[in-house]
Length: 305
Image (tube, rainbow, N blue to C red; front, side, top):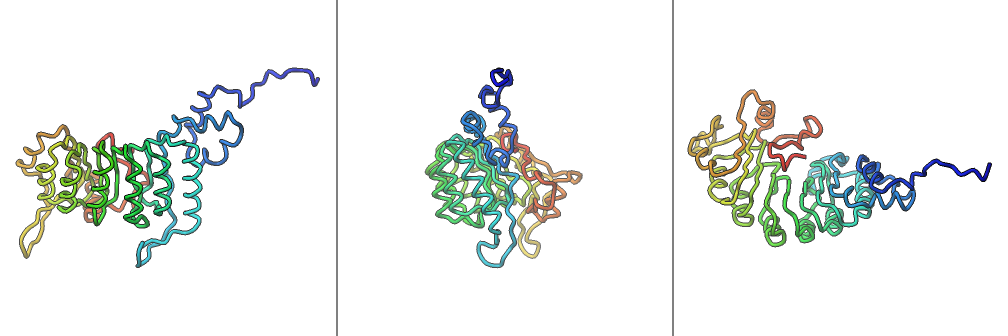
């Protein structure tokens, strides 16, 4: 009986392309749980560049509580350990082939984690950033210097945008696409015009947007092709005692300015659920209140996740 040759094929003898397709169906937790240690064939399939074009961490959120002092959140040790392990294994297996990196907006990444990731993903072209709280200016600038091929960015709002966008302008010559998940005031808009004047795609959906900021963007970003202001609360500044009022319909002069764009995407419909949510949240959508994954949506196809 011992001399009988078995016709059963072994897993490690499976064609590598088939293994790669199978592993592409695994989520990040499954793929980093030890699959690559089964045998050399499985490790080769786990390290295939096709599997690592996108590193999607959008299902991973930090377990945190808000605190009154900087960084204004406390992240428990277990959350950090899980993220650190996932990053180390993923970045080792990917062998610098990651092109798209997606963080959850409620993932609180530290400086060390961000720079560690940036140094090991130099081919990155699309980045969806997490919350800023634990990322310092030095860490962010160091990361951007590693991402010289960056083209597309989704980011939270930032209080001091010049240093960040200047770093992008210096290091990312192909940068052309931006989504801001938060307010865009005149300071932010003027910073865009100063440092990324060749921006082609801009999404400002689901936030408060003043008319003068919208006009400035249309006048200043000469290379802009696509602008998304869907579900925004459009405001007009007024002198005291009124100060501001909500605009319910775009002025024809604004629409005329926008005719040069390939796409000008708007939605100011009272029956639209997303418009209702933006107004309810006073112009800053609190994504955590709604369906998981809702924050990933965008009317601009290239920015939707």
